Image (cartoon, rainbow, N blue to C red):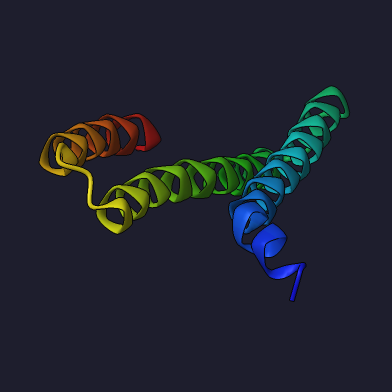
Length: 99
């Protein structure tokens, strides 16, 4: 029973840790792409790996945006509409960059 408050206060932490793991994995993939270029790998293979890295990074960004919206709604913040508008603007900028 004494561990319940600890779990409740640290529950967002594993999600952040998982995002860091995803980014580290993407970093490793990107190093692999660099090696592929150095070794003159075929263009389609390099582009496939670049798309995988981009997708991994995009997923982290989308997760961060959605978590911000969830936390705003869950907290019942008064400025949630403003936070929602900010998150949507960020999402649209992010989506534009992701193309």
